[in-house]
Length: 440
Ligand code: URA
Image (tube, rainbow, N blue to C red; front, side, top):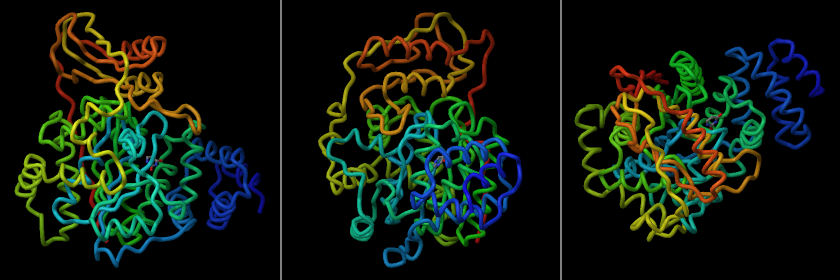
């Protein structure tokens, strides 16, 4: 087979065969197909799409590009969560320790930022010393001994996604249903989880702009997982405005710690409680944690009594992180300049565009614009208002944390585009739009 023939076939809108998809993924993973040909195929898939069958084949080929992990010696039923990516989405930092506080083992591999969406690994690296690169043996040992582990993808797990993810990030080929479904589900299938909760986001700060597109992506992923024998839940959640207040690596870690202390922004706390409720529900397999109201109050208790925070502290400690930063988040990287962005008029907030806020953070160096960029972990934006709020002229809408005056100026321009006012009352945006469940 020749890579160019497969690219041309997809470019012309034809369906690829199982053999072609498997061959391409195998050869690209092995390094025999160069990045420029893989990028061309990604762009062709972006424009021409893939059928359900092609998407399933792509996912399976990516999952089988490395080892399939078997966690049965650690737990007979591993659970996992994954977000489709958003702005201010630090949910994993709260939900993982929260669920682990119930004695449910959570062993998760997370990613770096993708496009304008942040990545859990980048956020965790704001904590000095925290090691995100574990070997599979370390990953397993930690999961077995402590019931909590959070690190980057090991080289052996879905390596095809590792390469394609980095390539998509810098070639404008992220927002494609088959590519996102293949990326997320290949990792989830390879990681050995039996119950999977997906947080599929929609809105300007997500890769799926509308609820309908997010539902379509969620449905594809639920079907792929169910066909592979997994219990699946997909929540459709809002990402038209940032989640919580903090956007930017160290700022988000600070907000996650606040939330683990029983405080934190209301929307973010509720979001975490909902994701954790479904994780426990799926982990309980029809026996435990089925009563949503009871589960919710148990979860709130663990957030408020410090048990979830203690699990987070443990996670940081065992992976070599500086726990003093958990005890005192003021020790996390801090920007040298903090400037308020003020409301130019009075009215109701009609929009806080998540993508524009993300671009402000990117402009200050908080995200990557090309492979291998080194991040400024201290910079970011605190979002001080949400849609529906009434503001007066001159009220602070954002606090910009910057380390460079010119970049701060660029960020200010993006933030000016993020806000829209209305003279009339505006309804708040819902946190969730629905849930799709699939049982094996
Ligand atoms: N998260 C992933 O792991 N992959 C994507 O493509 C998008 C979000």
